[in-house]
Image (cartoon, rainbow, N blue to C red; front, top):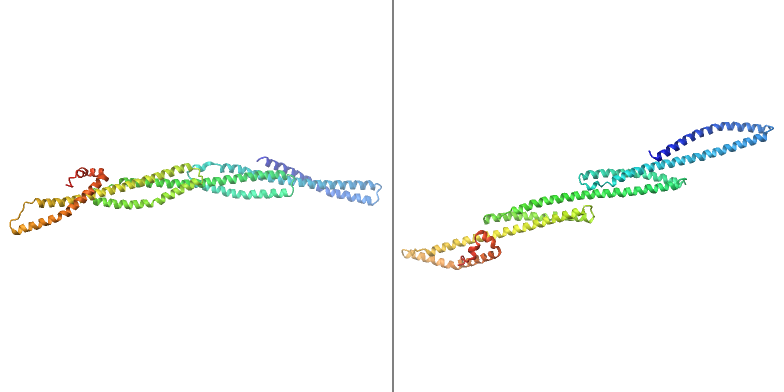
Length: 383
């Protein structure tokens, strides 16, 4: 209990004693009535001291009227005082609650992101209590306005107290609203951080896939690897919308002046760098697969052409000249066919030689890895 409660107890004690006094005054009414009737009788009977009796009677009645008036006014004063005390008591109780509530509203627990959903639920309960307390405030204000309108003697004190009460309530509402916004921001940050961590995880997984993708030992296997990698690249391109959504989320938080905006900017830069790194690694791997594909295709064509030349060389080097006319004619026909193939073969040699030089310029290191750079640069194949 505070001073308001003590004052209330004091005025209630005074009221109790005054009620006892009122009872004693009421009990004297019959006595006054009896005395007045006796005085009227004596004056009416022409008593020798009728004038004195009348004077005493009138004085007694007048004093009784004054007493009755004072009793009424005193009762009104006490009732107004009791009314004021009740108002001040209720206002003090509400202000005490608001002081504690402001401590809750100012609690910076929203910065601790653990169990943020539980904190939001707790704040919602706090908001519900504020709504309930609003009706209590409205009732107190209604009583105060009525007392001021009725010209209560303590109207100035009542108005000052209500200004203080309403000012504290407005401050509490602002602080509660601000905490609600901060908790909502914290929840948004938790959601962003979760998306950020998920994006980091799947990008690390896909980067590992890119780095582990190697061409096959032969063209056929490399083609299969390229097809699978093309599907992977298409799937990865679809993830760009995910990165765009994450950036959009981060930008909104920063634009809203989120209390963790510095961390959000750092995470946004990090995720964009990871995405760029993944894109670059994918392009390098795609280029590497294409280079190996070219090399292996060239090697295959080179081997096929070499086999054709070796076949022609074997035919030319043959010492079989036939043993009769028929066999000589047959050998002659094969030789003529061989000669007819030379222009086409020469064209194929020129094409392969040109391709070899192009590959040497573009992929010298890769051809050396395959053991082809030195022999081809020497021009032995061209000869």
